Length: 271
Image (cartoon, rainbow, N blue to C red; front, side, top):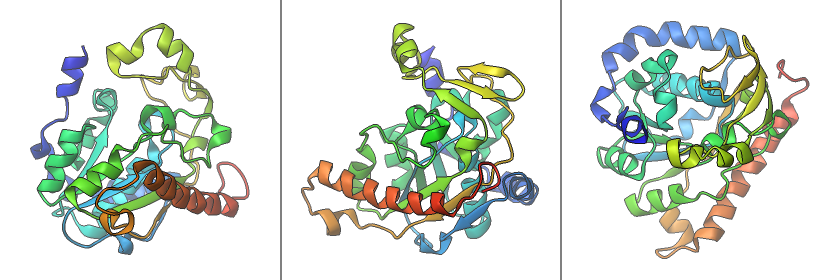
């Protein structure tokens, strides 16, 4: 099963600029209406060439903030700019999300990141993975990568700018109660599907939602996304970085920016 899932979305050629051009206006309009999308700082992203975008993300398997950012990036830079997003294989296996592959979503792996950057593409990675998107709703304003720092090594090795992206609001599209990490371990989901969590939430239309494998209807929470200044990893941290120090520095910068976004919000859902 894991071999089958890892094969889904591995082809970088699946991205379809013609499809993006055709459906982007309608999809961006819908996302803007439902989530009142506020995406700031796209001009901070280098306009050409390879770049590694690293973000926090929220909202369960559907990750609506990812959808908002992908649409905003594509609208700002155009469909022709190569842009890939790394995602868990199970997300790409969900039937409602088949269109993600047309927009450039591929299975999260170091090899796919390396190949995409080598092609001169912009690559979006979410180090927190399933552990972060299923954190409890009351931890909405927390960047939680669970200690994963491979993204720093990837940017250093490829010598490309690393651009942090922070978002708020996605964790209010349902009431996330627990990651279910112990339950996932008990059921050996990590070995079978690379899943470290079996989340429990209250979500439409299911009510009690265990696993979020079928997705859910996200509540219309306001999603705000901010792009931060690019980081030259080699210039800032040296040729032989202290990876832990680099990780703390980058995560600290992102957490500070996310805390500021949270301070702007007055009420859940309303933003």
